[in-house]
Image (cartoon, rainbow, N blue to C red; front, side):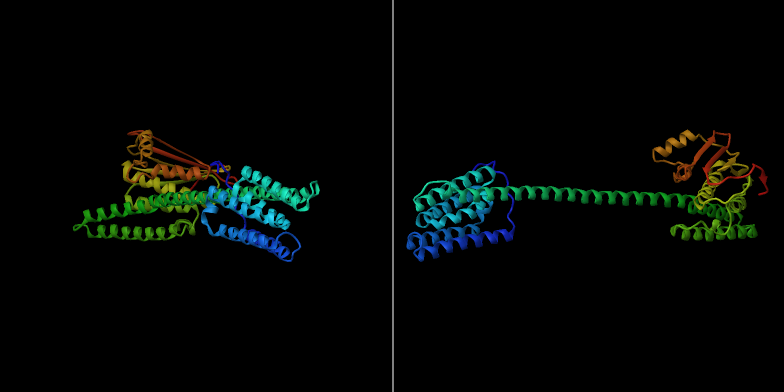
Length: 413
């Protein structure tokens, strides 16, 4: 057989069973009619039908017939020879041509199958005409119609099968794409959650642990002469550790920071400034400008965390003598400014180190300024830092909020 034989479609199991039953039934009919003496030689018809049945039965048992085009062609040729014997013995053998059409189309492919069907139809017409001792259109109608029906049926089934396989392939690709998309969404969610936890840890746990470390160092320096002062430092460190524990429990559960659970943002910022002053010795003042309006919880959380991180950087790195925190309520916006008179730094150099994977907050950790900027941008706001070596630092955050605020006037902090 030619090596370019197209791949044929598999026949459904039920159709195979029906085809086997059809062949068996037609051969049995030919034998019965021959033995009844109605058509042909009884002995020759029975022998030819038996031989064809044996060859046909051997086909499904030979695995090579289904795998190799050459083996299939040899089996069909042998089957055709036995069928010709049936045709010669009895005219009823012409009906066996119909299942042979399907076998040839299935096993031989499109071109070879059509050619084999044509030869089978010609053999059936010639044999039947010889038995009837007549030549005309009538003996050719049955075999030709059967051949045309078989070709249309098999080719139509193959077309439907190819369409079904294409649809199945597209569904598999869609399923795989959905799985890849779900995996990508999961990975993005994991990265977002890691970034959130990194910001929370930097702005809460890391800052508080730094305060505890500074307080314990102060207590160590005060011992043994100034035991009362050392005790105060230790008590402040203990309170900071308790606050730290509360923060850890709440942000792991993704809840509101404890400073905002029962108080407004200005009150929480006032407490933050007072705590920072007590624990670090750095004077920190809060100014609230404008008419106070309720803010969405995400805005309050972001501004409080940014203030915590900014003051933490000031305490650890700025060497400042004072710091000012200003919260301004404006029409449709809220602003937070943190200014100190410390040693300052080069923002561009810090931004470069952050892009290279180094420190991004003026000190250890690398989450300071990038974390503040990410919080502001996540809420559609802006973030800016102005600083220079020896000139202090000014940090500004501006967030859009629903509603408006009154005229800018300073309220007591």
